[in-house]
Image 1 (cartoon, rainbow, N blue to C red):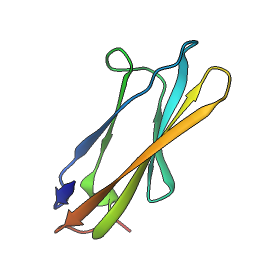
Image 2 (tube, one colour):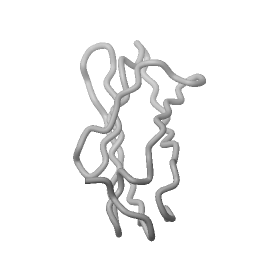
Image 3 (cartoon, rainbow, N blue to C red):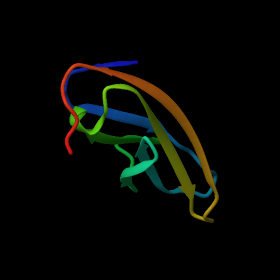
Image 4 (tube, rainbow, N blue to C red):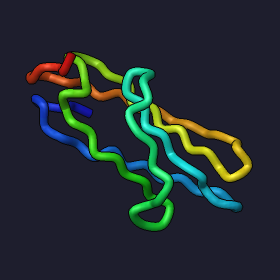
Length: 88
C-alpha cells in the first residue's frame, strides 16, 4: 500500500477467538501506537493513525491480537509513504 503525504488513515483488522478477543494492538515500525478492546463491528477492530506517524519510505504495521487466555497472534503489512514529513 502507498500513503501519500500526512493524511490520516484508519488501520482495520479482523480478529476472532472461540472464547473472545481481549485486545488488538497496532504497532508502527515496532513501536506500539495504540490498542483497541472493543470492535467497531463483529470481529473488526480499527485505529485512526496520523500519516505523520510514518517515516518516508517503507514502514511496517504489525497487528497483534490477544485472546482472553493471553494467547496472541499477529500479522503485518508494509506501507510505503511518499511526501509529507514525520513528526519528531
